[in-house]
Amino acid sequence: MQISSLGPAIRRYRKVAGLTQAELGEKTGFDPKTISRFETGTYTPSVEALFLLANVLDVQLKAFFADMADEDEQRAYLFGVIHKATPKDLGKLIAAVDQALSKP
Image (cartoon, rainbow, N blue to C red; front, side):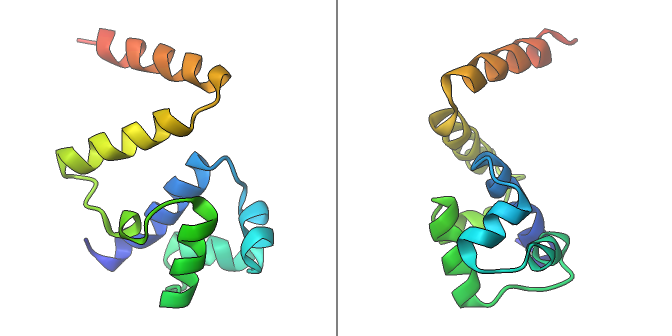
């Protein structure tokens, strides 16, 4: 993984956790602007910050460095999304999958 993929990974797992940047900032002690800068790659989080983000987002640290082009990593990510989804969101996920798979 390139370091430029770190920000999108933080954003992806924040969204899976259902948190806004402000909520993640509140839970980690970072200013929401700092969270935004982590996600855009303007700032690179320290190792300590990455451990904190992983803990709050309930992911393993290695998730931030997964190669999302790898099929196994994609399956693991989707499994995590499904596993953490609320019953209401499961219905949305099923509808989205059905729609995506119905396209030629």
